[in-house]
Image (cartoon, rainbow, N blue to C red; front, top):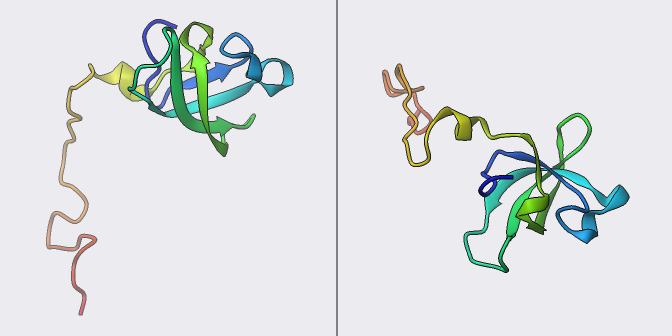
Length: 108
């Protein structure tokens, strides 16, 4: 896997990433965050959600894995859609923008 995983990436984590995930202990993880603190060279702490066969989150996990052993199942849509640091541009009015009918409107 070139570079570091990004939030939203879906990864296969098995024995290639760490011996604790070998065999039946392999899992599919949707990355929620990547710890920026330095660790051993080639290793990283990931926080994310374990996905079942239907892609539903069933558990939250923090894992310490080798970058070289991670297998990308699906990249984050935001990672493909725009360069890092580029703001998201939205078109049209935001919900509640007209008439003050937003979430914080006092209905009394």
